[in-house]
Image (cartoon, rainbow, N blue to C red; front, side):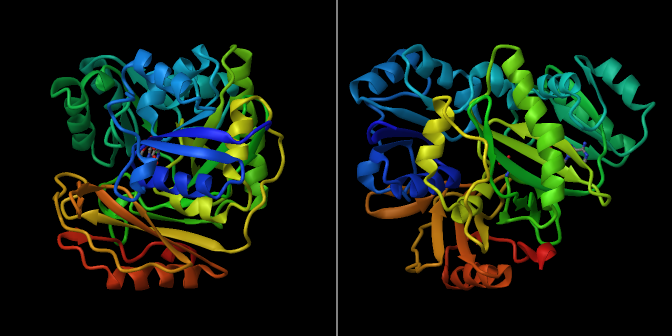
Length: 425
Ligand code: AMP
Ligand code: GLY
């Protein structure tokens, strides 16, 4: 890198707050602006919506050029699927995040399945349908459980793991008849059910070379004991012991390398972060459950706490074809994040609760998600509000730090899971 970088970070979640925290510690950073951000960011970091837009290409490009932005880091999937990385490359500004073509790996389950089939990547068998009648006729002949997935983006709500045929029927009706997911439900992917434990693996790549971050385990269900509705994620810990060094080697060989090669071969090298959602069977086989085209939330909040490298340098290298394939430098301990969510999340979260935060001390870092300022008052905006993270030599101590902080935190109408990381203890 020739000089220090002016960076623009897009997003407003806990993931982006954690990414910003790492970027601000980089010796390669000249300036950071965040859009739209949340109440966790200091006022001077947040960009004014008068100057920038994430939906108006012209306004976005003008902003990048006028502010001499050297690198755009895109947190969430929607702008990537809509082509934000392509807008950057049109004006030769590096972007950490894949092109719209590559982002289809998250934007269309059918695209991801076809790609995996071509690259011979291990995943559940599937069929895809564009109408209710043929999907339902097919499902009636299959073994249960079945997994019914709306093809397009559905904010994590488009997947039903159906144990009964009535659940399959309801999921298909929701998608095709009630059109609950709009155009994301114009097609459905029906998958066989995979047994095992899930893990999330983040891969930084420049389209050819890559580096793996430590695997994390997310807790997707709302309540203790993995019950209740699916959420964006209620907590996570890393490293996940289920992904042993031997299993990681298999994942690299059978999943990561073939996927990167496949994108390169079709003339669309994948740059940025590839999120591999895995199911690890008892016998140690790894199958892909899903790909995402961005960092996971809340896994990022804990995974980045293990990184012993300059994240900004890695992001810039990935965005400018200059990454090496090598082992990433990590801290030796364990990290975790426990999410504080609004009562009613994920279906109808309460909003507008006043937030007062007890002072946090290392090793606890609090990342904000659904928070905003109303004058001098901090208020919750619904959904996931905060991510309490910690790092320690032992996972047990890491979790104690998170939970000790949470017992001091008194925000009305909120809840959190008390069993994050318990499986690994
Ligand atoms: P996805 O959005 O594709 O990751 O699906 C959401 C969740 O549904 C995953 O995190 C899994 O818990 C579950 N899931 C998805 N596909 C499968 C599958 N083929 N077998 C078992 N569980 C699945
Ligand atoms: N925590 C799951 C995701 O980011 O998709």
